[in-house]
Length: 114
Image 1 (cartoon, helix red, strand yellow):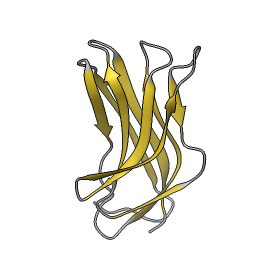
Image 2 (spheres, helix red, strand yellow):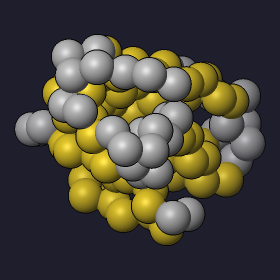
Image 3 (cartoon, helix red, strand yellow):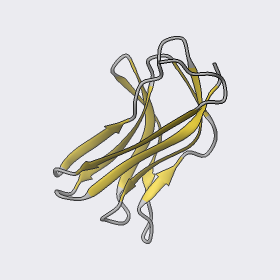
Image 4 (cartoon, one colour):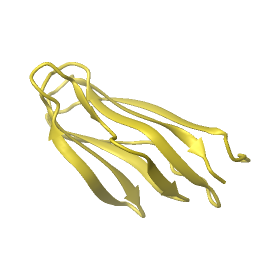
């Protein structure tokens, strides 16, 4: 994969809940590259006020930096600032105790810095 600074990193991953914690992960940053995510959301499109998490995965280990309930009239939570990811890291989201058949999605957008 050949990318140049300014190329867009974009992921929209959908999964269905199964009454357990549902982890959704985006694609890993390619070897030798750095990405700045400017927007990142985890959303349960079916049920409001779910408990959700945002983070990143490095070497298979999850590092969570935001956890909260979406709110009585909301479906998701989002990134408050930029997130820098280096080669091999992946953006991840979790819907805690995702109800069976709930439609859940992780959205991550940014740009390659190198």
